[in-house]
Length: 321
Image 1 (cartoon, rainbow, N blue to C red):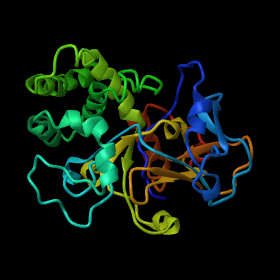
Image 2: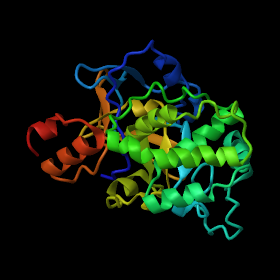
Image 3: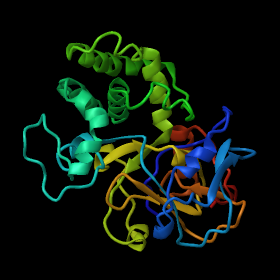
């Protein structure tokens, strides 16, 4: 088991349902001749865990269920010059250009990055990045990128509203004050007008961070076959060991199980692939594991409770395995 996932989707706020259009937006890459067909899943509500993903037909073991592109992603600070700034693909040679420049793996990625990079490169991010580095912060980088997308008109301030937020303590909110002020002052110092950054209030920043905290996927890129990845050792929990982090829409609706029937992985880029670990029957809920499933019962419960805010009641945990 490769613990590549660190988020939850225990949704209690029921909105008018946009899920059909979300599902139809993803191509099933396991059928190259039918790239426009939707994946064999639908999003609904569970009795105990809020929103969930369900099979609408039988899915065979090993089947690629769907792929997903991120809404927002950002490389880790240690990967700024060794991974593509857009797709996070690891580069063969570390970029040796000036620190103000960032590398792209292709012309296509450079062009697609314009939805945020044309705005981002107008500002000096050195102080913001240094603060995040010294404090061990990774999620503010995703907020930075989202803010640049909003200013450029590629996104809206409500982009993450559909996602479940974490419960933040007053101490956690107080600690966000410095990073928020640094983010806003970076835009102000770059000459962005009050109108352009009107959305960037402290409350907006806190609300976005609360959603990123439990919906962010930690990206570990690996080359090789699916089987090689499934047999590889557990990754380090150190944030800087990851190539980056990303937020997805449809994958954020998957609930957790310590004995999952679906695995999420990344082969070369930030584009995610979700694959069935075993046969899944029509109507069965699809679940992924948010943590390292090789840990014992008490360790799993502690991490899920402290990091994701819920007590796991999956069959494996109920049997005290």
